[in-house]
Image (cartoon, rainbow, N blue to C red; front, side, top):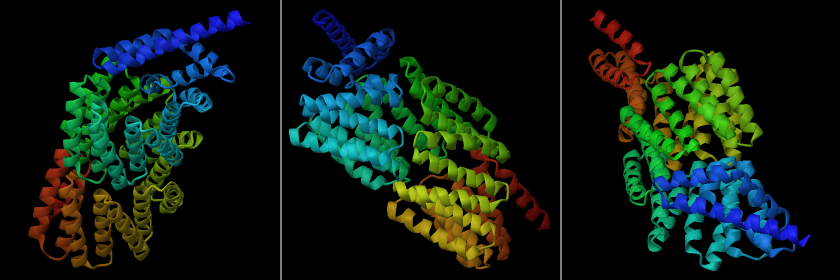
Length: 520
């Protein structure tokens, strides 16, 4: 009936306007972000009913098609308030509507947003295909803002696949465009993404400089979400450098900002990050308190990917408490979710950790089984960094079985990949493992050479825990070579590092130092 149709159309148009207002408030930044999200929460049922009507009436009705397309366009608010798969149910009819109208600009926007949802679900190759389609459209129609967004999305996807240098190429292109068109929000995002890529390459000081620039812009434009993201990323960089106190300060500021604007998804990440700090401080029970809070928020939001992450991190905490069997229970839950949602990146992660748990149980054959599965996934999804990591762990498992030559071949493959992709952290670990292999074979001078190479890298990237391991391994080798004085000197420095970082390795070093000093 025309009367009912017109009334439903007016209702849908009105609440599309309300949704547009929520997004506009968000883009104003500062306190307006919270007002926008609050308005959405108050009107969410009406907004959703308007979207459903529009999506159901797109065929042969241009007004409904335009509304359907418009409803799905507001990424900032909708990505914070709709679970990924629900948002996908808005985006798919919106894309069809944009193509039918036709509206090329909207088509590119929806392709990018669907790519973002795929990205959040771990479907990275699918996301890349969508971003490339978005980029092609935006270049054809001369939509430079859309072009910069597509470039940034491509950079993020390749970064997640472990291709940080390729990611940097995309982010640098996006940064140039954002500066040319005066898009300060986009400029900040590009700077933040460059920081993430450089952090992944082990260049943490350079990364922190990018995050500082991102933070300045976010504060200038009142982008509270961007400010929170900058603090979170900076915290990760300080964590990588072993500066746990500064990392904690960043995460606490991130948490306060996210709670202030009601960004529960951001709050979820901040809680989990604080848990990581306590885990690195050797306080797994404190870490568990934060992981449990993060897990609750993730479940409240229906964010299955984050639920998967926190279950896995709870497993890591139990592993550090010396409870590998309990850790396995959580890894298996995380693995089940990763497989259910098709998140292959996380699937690889928790298969890897299952292997490590079985290593702790002195069952290297099971470690090999799980890491072979993880290695297969890493290669299938093109995750080069993950591939290198799994090769390294497989090497450790073969070493535990006394198959040192096979272990060394795997370490060499890990080293090659790490150098090819510029992953300094992985390069340091591979060199350290090769040092241990040569020490096992009795080639102590060659072992020292590899430990020294690893030590140089770990110092350059600020990886204090790795530095401590290298120094202690060097001390054990130097003692075997009869240089007890040098062994004690290196072990003492290793002990100081372990004590500063609160790790669990200090006791082993103290015991060895006591033995050496007693024997003098």
